[in-house]
Length: 148
Image 1 (cartoon, rainbow, N blue to C red):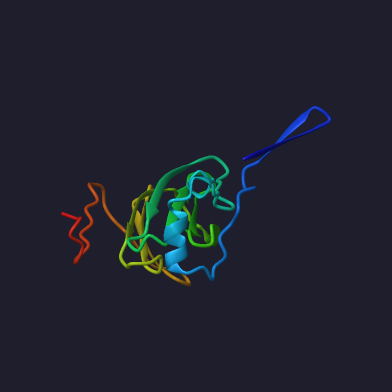
Image 2: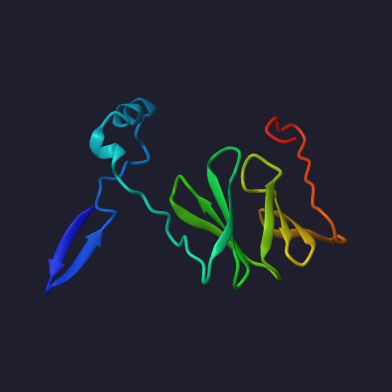
């Protein structure tokens, strides 16, 4: 992180570290893991913000995408971690209570909303919405050993 002072105003540059080119081999990336400067750098995800707050964040099973749900105005953002950028932003009718992911990537997320609706999404948007009665929401995802 670099600090620049201009006219008594401090400016912090948190992305001043060296970035890795996409074409680097896996062997070279492994060597960089041992480099102290490389390990201490900070990388920020672009546009990782919501108007008020985000209470639900979930990583996809393949570790390539991050799904976050904002409160007001209710919205869902999907971030691609390899690019450190926002991939998808979707607005919904009510804030998200629970996120489940049915695929290895971001292509099949399911959202339980506060108004007792469950939204099934696909890559192109909302695929199906169903309303549930009052009670507890239980999700069973087959072929996932970490779920009971």
